Image 1 (cartoon, rainbow, N blue to C red):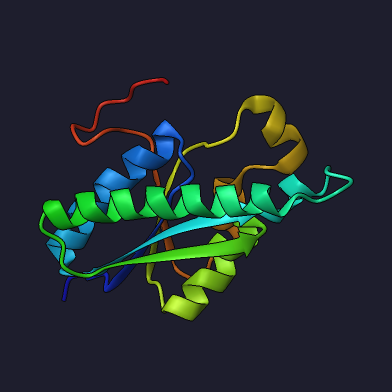
Image 2: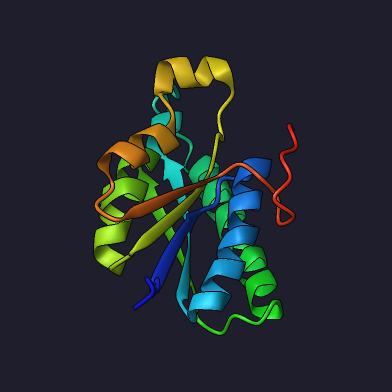
Length: 154
């Protein structure tokens, strides 16, 4: 029997690479009649540099993330997917995407863009995709090409 994925997780971070992964995940979910789980993780480390934490910053980040997830969900539904779920979490994107969300949602495939951070950020923070590849307990697909399987640098 051919492998069929039932629950596919795609991480949405606003990057063009994540958008490529999302569009491919929509197509994979359609072919597998799978649930597509769209996840955004608000990186709590980003707020550690504020000496006086301003709650409105977190509120704005949460609202922006919700709107982005809802836009992606609407696109997936317009493309014919009926089973789309959004997940908004706080914490380390690496850990949430590799371990916590897949465990909580019973994910069997994670699809990620090749990179989301710039080169300097990867040196200090480390690549989320690299961590997920090493730590996830399910299949991981790193997307480097668009829907026509063409590589474009952005």
